Image 1: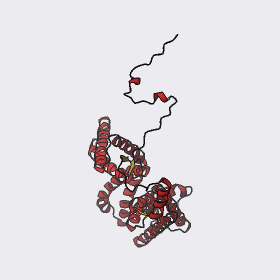
Image 2: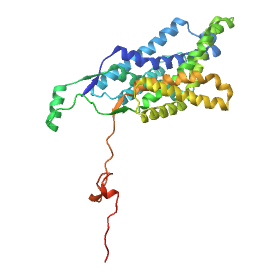
Image 3: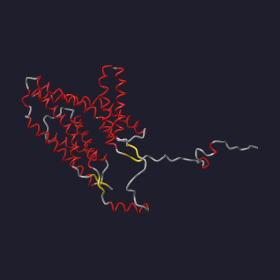
Image 4: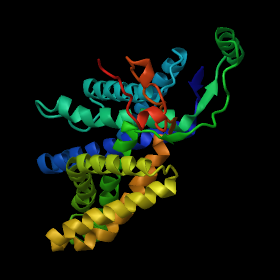
Length: 328
């Protein structure tokens, strides 16, 4: 039996998706306030304190959920992903109820907006379970009970054939890579935006809104196609019996290059995206391999037999000649 370790490093990694989503929602709230009530927009220090408070609450709830799962001796990454989603939803509900936010969501959008931090929390919980590592609990008692039940001690190592797991969470994380890379591009426009406005406060708002808008748009239009692409790359790589990260990166890059090249033949304007797509595919493949993990090769399926005489090898003489029954 194993438990997930207490790890500040894993907690920091788990907070990254929540930090991104909270920043995007905060920027949208600032942009809306700049349009509806420019005078009432809070000062940067107040915004920073509000953002830090939300992140501290997310961290506290996520760590509390981890402690609860440790008490229940649950260590699966699926359970940690669900725990992260629940804790993020609770944090969002507390913020809504106690007005720990810049502006209240509009009518009919409370649940819809809450889906973003919930999904980010699920990814964060998965990341915590991935990076924290496992520690054995009561190994002596577990080993003794297992040995008594089977007559021999349980194996501590496995040297049989393995393959890369099909991981839904790994696919989701890899599918977000195009969104993240596309969001980095608008930051090159920030100096231009800062110089293009006479009102520097407005320039700061727009310089923050454009990357946030890019993130939301790219996430909506690219997550599902990227997830399908990553699933195909994974199965193709596994069919070739490859399981190293650099092999996943190479096959992902080649597949993305080929897909974008085909699109470029249909839409020539997309030709300049061929090389960036190959780079993005390589990063997606490596990221997926990092989070997917390994599993033992499945055993052959059991054969249902009704005739014992048919249970012979492929090279048995009876399979290469027909028996003869002389009729009267």
